Structure formats: structure tokens, C-alpha cells
Amino acid sequence: MKYNFDKIINRYGTNSLKFDFAEEQKIPADALPMWVADMDFPAPPEVLADIQSAVAHGIFGYTEAKESYYNAVINWFKSRFDYAVTRREIVKAPGIVFALAQAIRAFTEPGDAVLIQTPVYYPFYDIIRDNDRKIVTNPLIYEHRKYTINFADFERKIVDENVKLFLLCSPHNPVGRVWTKAELERLDEICRRHNVIIISDEIHCDFVWSNHAHTCFGSINPNAVIATAPSKTFNLAGLQISNLFVRDTELRKKLKTEINKSGYSQLNTLGIVSCESAYTKGLQWLDELKIYLQNNINLTRDFLQSRLPKVKFIEPESTYLVWLDFAEYGLSQAELDKRVTEGAKLWLDGGTMFGKEGEGFQRVNIACPRSVLQDALDRLAREFL
Image (cartoon, rainbow, N blue to C red):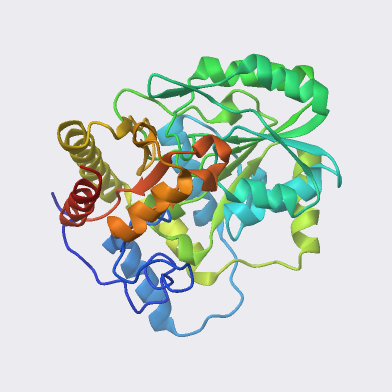
């Protein structure tokens, strides 16, 4: 391959949230970080070259996106997902979580109910609760190492709790589901019937495995709000850039007003540069990265099946985050977390971080050099055999 994903890069001492904050999080200093969802690979060299060119210019004044930026975003989603978006529909924001919080404030009132499908990405809870909205959960059904949607409960909760907004995670983090078109259509039909606004967080859409295919929810319901970013795809989270697709004129006006009320205007200069560069020059890097990550997933599955069969591997249909079921060990979440961090010396994400339905699980980030992943698996085996 053209790109080398085996190289280990020392991330300590860079103020990395993933590596440099073990003491603050009460994690053993020698625990191997495999938690928060950023990758241990540099961004594509083509993107780095464009960033370095912008840095060399030396002036970081107020910066705005030109036509080429919008064309890069539009072409990426048209070519990869057959989803057509126009420049007018794109709302830029410094990150998806920020944008989702603004959207919740824009589209609902304090006290309104917002529905999420649990276990789910933990900031969803915070942005609902911290904005004085009511959290309503539609727990996913977990059977035979796979998650499905409880549609009866979904509609019942919408009716009983007078839900105003549904926050969809698609593909789903942490369980790794790629929702089928039929599943998305059924969710949409229920929401339309009860006048529920839909926001679909699709930040992991570029990582889909095997024969699965991501369906942009905007192709199901043009009035849904679609949240996207190059940050997970190209490891650019620290540059704070995201794009929301908002076709509905009234919703777009409300969202832009809420963002303006926050005092935020122009984006990070290097975020704009990196986003346009990644979407125009990063495809070959991404294609090779996906092959590498798929092999990391295969390694993890095969290792657990042969060495730790009591740890149930939930086959990821998407993302570079592996969801592992430790229920057969009969441990509480606190006991499991302690054995992982203090025994195996691994820094993972404990399952209940994603809601009570995550009891007995751990989320593992496998976006790292293969030798690091092998080290992590060996640590697990030494502790749990």
C-alpha cells in the first residue's frame, strides 16, 4: 500500500485527551489508551501538506469558505452515498456535538422530550439534559450478539412522552449497526405520523464494513437534519469542523439563528483547509485505511474466539469501535472496569458510559497500529483467561 499505518507515533506530551489525561481520569499511568474515538494515525499526507502550506503563510485572520469548499463537501456525499445537497443547505459548525446542542435549542423548548436509542454515544445525554430537555430512551434489542430496533416501544414512547425530536445515531455508536433502508423508513414513517423532528448523526458514515451500505437519512426524509464531519474519517477532530445538511428552510433559519446567538461565526481556519483538502485528496488514503482497519477487526474477532471465547465479539457493521460483551464473567460494571484498567492495564470505555444498557460491555478503539492492538489483546488475555 502507498500509506504506512504500522508506524507507531508517540502521542504522549501533546495534550492528547486520549493519552495525556490518565491522572485526571484516575486511570493507571501505564494503561494503554484504547478509548476515545480518534485514531493513532496521522491525517493523510496530502491534507497535512495543505495545512502546512496554510501555516507557512503565517496569517490566521478571519477565514470563510469559498465555492471550492462547498463543492468538495457536495461531491463527496454525492459520489459516495448518492446524496445530493446544495450549498444553500449546508450549515457549518465547529463540531457535531456543538451543532446538535444548537439544534436541540433551536427546534425544541425547555421541558420538551428528546428520544435516543440506547446504549448510545454518551454526549447525547449531556446535550439533552444540560439544555433542560427530557431524555426519553428507546433501548435497542440485544439478541444473538446483534442489536435491532424495538419499533413498538419507539412509537409508544413518542406518544406517551409527547416526543418532539428524535436524535438518531446512524451508523450507531457504540453497537456498530448500519441501519438498513427498511429500518430507517419505518422510523421515518412513525416520526412523520407524530410530527417528530429527526436529526441524524452520521459522523461514522465513511466506515462501513462487509456488504453493508450506509443510507443517508436525507434520502429517506428530505426534511431531516443530517450531521456530518470529516473528523472521524480523516482524524481531524481537533481542528473542529462539521457540516449539517438542512433542506427545510424554516429549520435552517432556526438553526443558524441559534448558532448566531451563541456568538460563533467563522470557523477555524485550518478546519476549513483540512475539510476541503480531505474531501478532494483523501480518498486513496481512506480506501487503504479501511482495508487496514478491517484487518484489525478480523484480528480482534479471531483472537477473542480462540483465546477468550467468554468475551463475546459484537460484529461491527461500521465504525472502528468494537463493542465487547463480558457478561459471562458475571462481574458488575465497576468490577469489570477495575479489572480492565488495573489488571489488564487497558484504558477502554466502560459500557455504562453509554447508558444502563451497556452494563457488562467495553468499547475498544481498534484504529491503531496492529502491533499496539496485539499488545492490547494480549493484555486482555493475561487478565481474563
